[in-house]
Image 1 (spheres, rainbow, N blue to C red):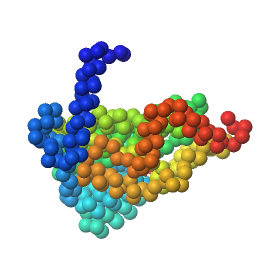
Image 2: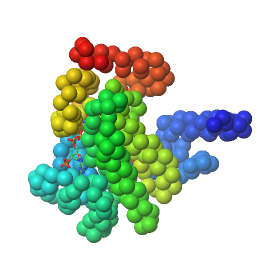
Image 3: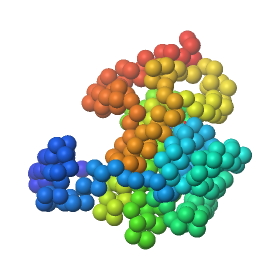
Image 4: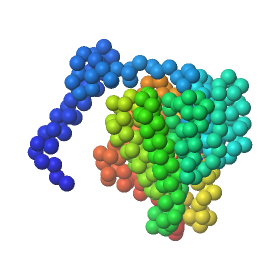
Length: 324
Ligand SMILES: NC(=O)c1ccc[n+]([C@@H]2O[C@H](COP(=O)([O-])OP(=O)(O)OC[C@H]3O[C@@H](n4cnc5c(N)ncnc54)[C@H](OP(=O)(O)O)[C@@H]3O)[C@@H](O)[C@H]2O)c1
């Protein structure tokens, strides 16, 4: 839909205002609250580190990888935890470790797509810790599949887990915080693949892009209620994610069409993401990136679809001859 001249001018005006506001804020918090007409004093809270000690966070997908590392990092910061994943034994082990640090932990084992599970997480936090401050909707998995052969049921399942379940949790959390007039910080674990995709990873990337867009819009919608929303965009991280992708691949796809996307220098430990999440909880920001280079590349791919296509084409050439 084409914009009218007035709409174009308004959009441009709003962009210029935002640029000024951002530049002012870089000069220091002193410039904020001196009567900025659009945002006013509410913006200053971003520039003071928030105390996390004694606050509660709900983390899904906490039985391994990024979720488990983030649980430990949040415990180190003094937070209480409500942990979820399907493997209860893994959660128990982690909870024991965290309790030894002196933190309080509750476990709600189960599939995030099970009806009522997300509500149970909120109610557990409310009953045990008298509420919560943060949610990290992190449970998710990857799928490597040529799109021309991707079954609709596989596509629906990955959207149920990665997108709908994380969205429901964040939405329920926002409603709870708003109803109780409480501040909070809600995060979803998206991926750098929210910004560009890779061959055979389109289904997964689509779920991650959906998460990132929802977080972006909800951040603006909820800011006035003192509820911050961020998305986390990790790059390739050393977790069980990649084994789980291999397990789900049908053998033919795995052997004939597997593309090797992981360049060693772009693989990070889950603790790297966990530290970035805690930093964001202390000083909220819209997006958490853990690699400047990948973030820069994502920007270049947006500016030049040709460059993105050239790069993606080269990835497919890695497949064995005759499998195209
Ligand atoms: N590793 C990467 O390269 C990478 C990069 C960017 C983004 N991410 C994102 O990071 C998040 C965490 O992944 P990870 O790398 O830490 O992989 P991981 O080690 O496989 O962890 C995934 C977690 O999600 C849980 N989970 C999966 N399906 C679930 C379900 N239906 N219900 C409840 N829990 C479920 C798993 O626990 P159970 O099996 O016990 O249920 C596990 O705790 C995911 O959203 C992923 O998309 C990963």
